[in-house]
Length: 188
Image (cartoon, rainbow, N blue to C red; front, side, top):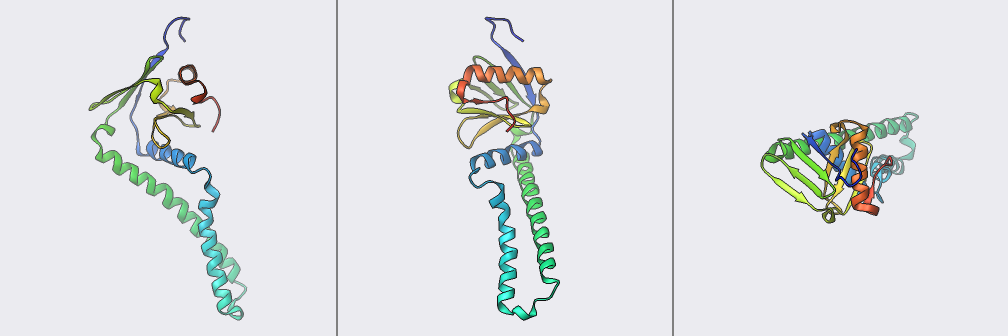
């Protein structure tokens, strides 16, 4: 904790993994397209199976046996599992390729956060951001996001923090400097 009149400041070193990047990308995309949400995304396999069942029934209703509905149900479960697995593994694979092709992303990055702003540095770069550059900050269950635009954010995985005290210190700095643009301290 800092004394009154002192500027709060802490440093966090982060080595991003492909799982970190995939999780953050999913969060940003789901947040951006929340009007779509997850249920409509998972409705596609349901619609495919229902469409297949209806087309077979319309073609020859007498040929439908007792096993038809259970078979469609099994096909639906298979599609949902395949869709979920493909979505998660595809994004993870894409993030792995991105990280391996970007030399600066393969090295640890250091975030220095204070009332004066945010400094992000790595082996090949050094970036300084004033608080006015941050559109908003959002806290999720596993990360803090510092949005530079609607679609672009720096993120800090909570597992790199020393503990709850350091996370609370970040929440205090964000709230103090971003005011209503800081959406922290709640489970999202």
